[in-house]
View (spheres, rainbow, N blue to C red):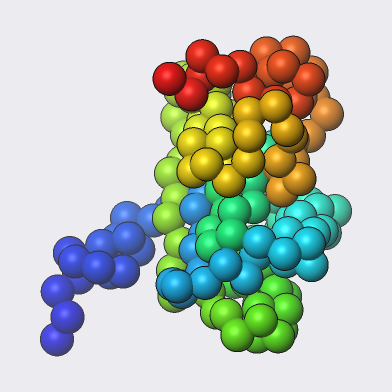
Length: 170
């Protein structure tokens, strides 16, 4: 019998969904894969994130689609719990991934933000991910990045015309 304190069992242990709370999520493809690097993969992910927002599954605050994974900051809605929201997201994108010979990893990583937790480090981590991986020069915006209008009003003003400040990458 597998040890519940190791691997995916440890990820699920203590997982609790609370509507109205912010969750920092990481969802990965089985590796090796770069199926999300193409326009269809990137736009498909962003469109599905927005569809789930329209269905009040979550409120999308900010997200980045990388070639083999994605990071999101969402506010969980009342429609379902976190695991079901991820199952919906992955399930709707599975046919697109299969076209490119890819599949999702079995689970996902989540961190529920405490009410007093600073948001800026989370926004910077998500925003800077493609630049830190060397996927794009710092003077170009990443096409797989999304941020809602309310959050972009404060966070966008910190950027250099949708690009990172070079000092952020030091």
